[in-house]
Amino acid sequence: MISRKFEVVLFVVGFGGSVLLFACNKNSNSKTNPSTASMTFMDSAIQLTSVSATMSGSGAVISAADNGKSFGVILMLRPPFTLNKTLDMDSVGDYVQVTVTGRPDQWGGGFGMSPGDGKVTITSWDSVGHRLSGTFSGVLSGGIGYSDTLSTGKFDVQYTAN
Image (cartoon, rainbow, N blue to C red; front, top):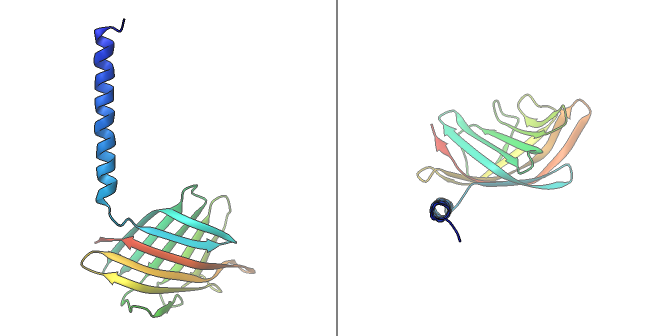
């Protein structure tokens, strides 16, 4: 026969777990359109899951990493943003940077990352709803004599305004 104390413990744990499950479901449902990003780099299709973005008067910074924390990407974009026009990352302050865990190098294209050549196109910008979407690609430099192609990069991010 089960003791009364054990029944109470089971009830409390079960009730607490139900409340936690409901709260988690409510929280994930409240984000109807979460931030996403993906890319192909070093012949690997990479879905980036930890995506965040901030926007200030000086520009937008988008950062993301994959589930295994093997790959990361940082996009630094300076305004003004012109929709559907490819931004060549050679302008001052703009860059694309990809990090690869377990390697001593960082790959980049844009200002200060020559001979890398990154490109970004902003396809949608909702300044009221704080959402920014676009594509990115390029040939990224990993140092003198090292380069690799970054392709099919996409982002759709909810950003925090500073």
